Length: 417
Image (cartoon, rainbow, N blue to C red; front, side):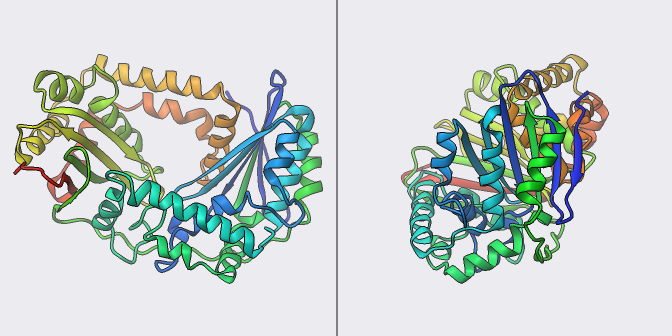
């Protein structure tokens, strides 16, 4: 049982603390409740841009990375459609340095034209590298546009709709986005490691207490209409192989069926004993690779089946082989031993993850943000309670033709029909 402490400052900052006296380090993880879903459709990529801007200097700390390196720390960040996450891991004796630099960039960034120009270039090059110049790099631009209405903020990837939105970002655009989202009353700070609750309270009050709360822009999410017909698209490009993407709307992270959908993905493709690996790669030799995974977003989940088929099979043959596997999950009960194997793999993965202080801090912050702090102790139990009947019912809800978006990414000289 993980026993945490939590408190909230007058400015709205939520803090969760987990002490580990055996550790030699302290991790500060900050989750801001802002992701690409909070962007304007004509100004996309801003949440990801801020993932970079937050390292380019704050109002009192010119060289964020330099200060932390001198303290023996390391740090990183990531952005999703739902949130932006920053973490720093420091030697316990230098923990106060982390509170200082993290609070300073929550207070205000430096906001200078040179820093903005540098990060615009960095993000623009990343867009090119990940999207424009990478095989299949724009696949999710096509898929998200198929899945969601154009006015829904899930209809583009976190990297943004197009590079021009970042290249045209002005200083005023950047300031407006920062002060509308990066606020103590929109943040969740988790502190894990060899530090007492009294010391955390002292340092949080010292460094974060005077940061003013802000008027956070109220999120306006468009409705996601139920998909009533299969969506299909074929694109071609300079890619090494034809590739099939099949994506289904599936339970969101807080939906009761989320755990069943996650288990279904592992039954299909987690390891060499999984169903699709054995039957579609080994036995039928139809695919060189195939994978199933889920995206447990907060507004709407997605269940992906992604495969690279071998030559000699038509598109219909490839898709029908996948549908055969999905239909089995809809009509037959999963055997107890097969289910236990998948659940045991999840337990092992979670145990290994909990050995990482940073990973634990990240999970604590995420659970706080989604309003489900008890998941730190109950998440695995939710997997272990899933029954074969629940799996079958979840498969029946998800794996429907009218709930599917199918994208074929074809190499330019493909003859597959």
